[in-house]
Image (cartoon, rainbow, N blue to C red; front, top):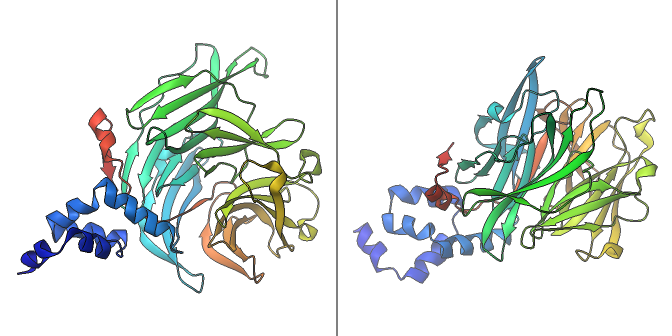
Length: 389
């Protein structure tokens, strides 16, 4: 009887009803109705569902926390949370051990990049994973075939993940510096290299473009407007952008009051659907931070450097801050303290809340995302297999 009712419903009515359900409920259709399950996996439905989700205020959080279990052994855990009106975190699913994603080198370089249509990139600079935390499917990218000659060293400076709307495909870009290893302690001349991975054809290629040295900071890689952003140092600190459609670099000036000589550090975030810049005190400074302010700027017109406006000045937080991590729900500034814990600062009320989440300094990574049905399964046609976690 139930199947007969399902079959009689017009498809547009079915689509309207199904668009109201969260991803977790929609995935249960696999055991209820093969026809409806096939419907939610179509490109049309996925796009409609994504467009609806974008207009909602429901945001989820993915944390990556890294701990040093042994002097040369790191352990990384991925945690997935939702939040209620009281700003309390609620576990969405069991923690995921992603220690295989953590290199054994002295430097902790776990990055979360995105989100892009609900997809997130995780990387330790060597291994790159694309995942959809809502469908719990992921893809481990094949390693780049572009190494370096014997006697040279390749240092990965930045990784970006995003969407190319012209070819309707996802891409990953990897920025590296190749150095000659001389007998002395100082590296030889720098040669920049750019590798690009096309998910649609499961293939890496090299780009014949150059880029300045990346000024790496926590919370410094941001995907926005089909471009990934980093900081670089010229005469002052500026923002470097890589456009996934044109595959061209460009730079963007920061507010005139933000200069490298002033001593602050910087982070990027999205606030009210605009690119935001967070200027915060250097945690390595010997100066007492309790008198330092955190300034948040917003770019009113993307690409127009003259349109930066300061929208928040955060009074000194009573807990020493290591770095900003993200802006959540457009008013909660997430930060890591010098003791390694996660706190939130309400930009409207000034309320500070500490969470029972901690990690090694500079290793806590946070990404705010919205659920989606975006699939990466078509990539498996080319050999790289999509897996479930």
